[in-house]
Length: 262
Ligand code: ADE
Image 1 (cartoon, rainbow, N blue to C red):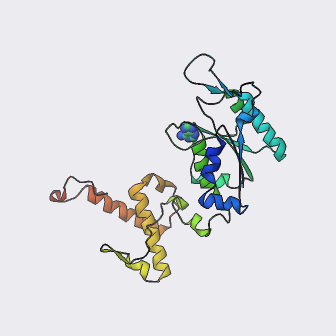
Image 2: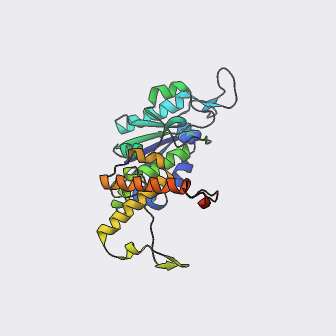
Image 3: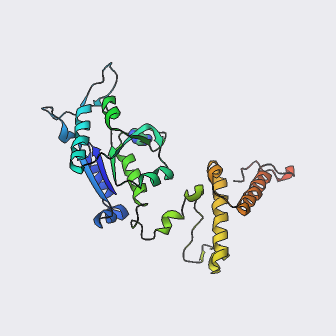
């Protein structure tokens, strides 16, 4: 996977991505992270890359020419025209499914805007995907690009030590991950669930799936509509739903303490 990040703040991206797992994967050659400074492509005397918006209004707008020229120079070097992802709160909200799809690409260009955004004509000319990391507004596209690069990279074969861990985790099958425990067996009087010490792999697997289903129901019930469950798991989910409904709406009114049980 080769990432190319078009930005006015290249150090922010390279400093942020050259540590830990992503940095190690880049050092091993499993991925490459190239930053392109959009400012290097301005033809203006004073190195300006932005100007006031036509029609008036606050802030500055990044000009079309340096953005398009930076992309065209990159395409010339690569001999291809990779997808261009523009980081914007107006985009589709990034998720694990989009990450999986993007992880199949050989090259990805991340276009990071600043100030009040980028001249629409540059976006029309080069952008293929508009992506957001959530319904809030940041000062620029660098952090969203770094979030997406981190997420996509862990799906690139070899980046995680254990490839299975990229699969059995939150959002795999639209379920949240089950709880994890490590030594000691008892911490401050809290015991590790017995089944995990049993060495019985089938029971452990069943327990983990059930925990995933329970957790998803309690924390992200919206995901369950798309979850891939067996008939047995569906029954388990129905039992849990009944259990939760009973806790919320106790038959014996003396049970009610006004507290939300979840
Ligand atoms: N740029 C500013 N805010 C953003 C967001 N929430 N997602 C992606 N890009 C952004």
